[in-house]
Amino acid sequence: MEDLLGTGGTSVVWRARDEVLGRAVAVKVLAGSADRERIRDEARNAAALSHPNLAQVFDYGESDGTPYVVMELIDGETLERRLAAGPVPPDEAFRLCAEVAAGLAAAHVAGLVHRDVKPANIMVTTTGAKLVDFGIAAPAGAGEERVLGTPAYVAPERIMGGAVTPASDVYALGVVLYKLLAGVLPWPGETTTGVVRDHVHTPPSPLPDQPGVPKPIAALCMSCLAKDPANRPPARFVADTLARAAARAVLGEPVARTPRWRLALAAAAVGVMAGAWLYSGASPLREPSGPSGPAGGAASGAPPAATSSSSSTSSSAGPVTVAATTSNGPQQGGGAPPTSSAAPSASPAPSLSAAAPVTFTSDGGTAAARCADGRAELTAWEAARSYKVETVTPGPAATATVTFRHGNDLVDIAVTCAGGTPRSEVTTRKR
Image (cartoon, rainbow, N blue to C red; front, side, top):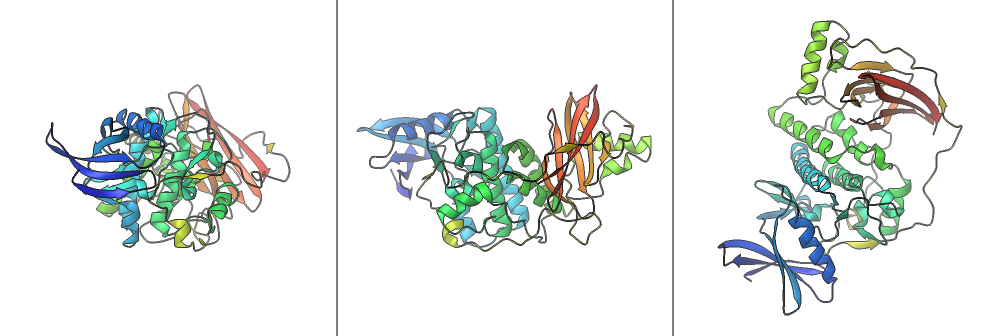
């Protein structure tokens, strides 16, 4: 052992040297009477993964009965410390979260859920972000006898005793992205109990408009924070979208442009161009302009409430146990039962090429969709005046949906594929 790198509630990390391979490494040693199985599981979980945005594990062993893990030595600082030094520019926030999302996508493909995504577990290096500490990772679909994690970043379904899923990691990453862009958490809770209750019951405060944060990225962030895990985008989608936003920010290009799917309705030649553009992977998320803009409202109304530093910054001492139940159950929607319209309020325009999206309209807004390998994918969506985008499940999936809201009135556009052609069902209901 050479230098002490850090201490936590369950372990101590030292800088050391691998005398066999002649390289510097980090050695994580179990502290005191902490759970020996947890550090062994961490080694096994992390060792099964190989990705540039995940810390690599080299070895596991025991010395005089004390377990230790030999890991990649990361030259950098935690994102938590980076935040303490001052605001993070939007383009840097996009890049860092894109890299973490890419690492999470690799873990999810391997069937692992991290369960403790937070700034203290993200290392910022000269070569990119690295997600560390798989100490409480679990197989996707596993149940939880007790909820482990840092309260400010625990998804609502985990608090309510749901199964471990990749969507829970996406939720935590959405909290991280929100905090990087807004400087505060998305909820006003100032105590652990308050934060936990907010996760389950309180809609996140809308991300405030600010220079350098395009509307599509704000919409993506809010989609990650959806209460229903089915309405959150997958980690790979988040990674790709944020990576494109970061690249465009560096090049000085706008992220949100006039939707090219509109041009596909004009002429066949433009439809072919739109198809090529979509297949290039440059399709943007669309979010309406502000209340006075041409497209209607933003995702919600009030500015975010201030949060005390004790609730918005997690401790580096490691994860804590969160109560698996709360005093009140999840809020249920009220009002009249959903009523499905017989057909969309406007028939879809014919597709002019195999890749060109089809446009569907409703009282709440417009959505464009296409079919790929029998799965529906939303390529663009826009709220009508006085409506706002509530949730989006863009796909590709058996059913891709977007929900628009005006007060307590909700309008859903659900798109499926039949014979390679998008079909929609428009539903109006009360919140």
